[in-house]
Amino acid sequence: MSDTGKQTVVLVHGAFADSSSWNDVIAPLTRAGHTVIAAANPLRGLQGDAAYVRSVLESIDGPIVVAGHSYGGTVMTVAAEGNPNVTALVYIASFLPEVGESTGELANKFPGNQLGTALKAVPYPLPDGGTATDLYVEQDQFNEIFIGDVTPDVAARLAVIQRPIAQHALADPATASAWRSIESWSLLARQDLAVPAEAVRFMSERAGAHLVEVDASHGVTVSQPGAVADLILEAADATAR
Image (cartoon, rainbow, N blue to C red; front, side):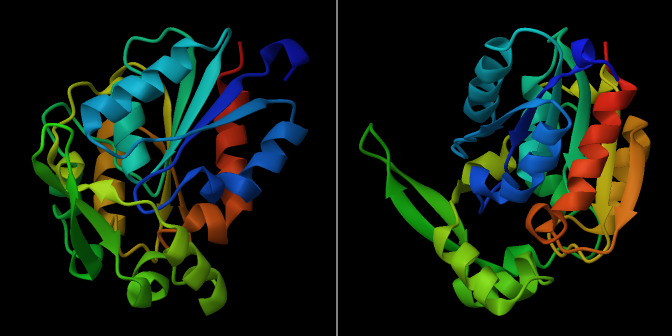
């Protein structure tokens, strides 16, 4: 691919993580000549999260590859709709929702989701004086359920710095399905206990996404960043303009 074909790669993290979850994915992308932006997904509600990521995409000149992990895939599916600069969508252990489907619905569509039993609900105040609920992964279950293929000390650190997601964000229905008009790739993590393999396979096949499988946990951006970067680069090369 010539230098004129280099896209900007936008990385969208999911729930219970932050942009640092892409740390070891970034270097291979920049070495290949891509500008990389790891967007700060607010995790406050699907429409607001998608609007924020959409604003990031709209601030970029030239072609864009968007990669989303877990709930980040739901967000980018809505955010990328109608953006002519987005050349590829890359779903990493992620959700590929159809219009009207929610993240929570898809997580439980097939057997194997164990994350729901490891969540802790914590109320938080709203500006109007009401309350809503944040969800965290219980720290003592983070290694086993969320990222079982890293050492316990690494998992313990990630558990401490996790970012919660507003509970209603997982129930919000998708209002767009960008994969219908944008070529897509999907990474299935065979040891995933949050987005079961059967669910990823179903969603990926429905979307016509290029599917690869990796022996990894849900936290594959941390445990196998090379495989993640390889798929993003494959998508970038295939859709270079």
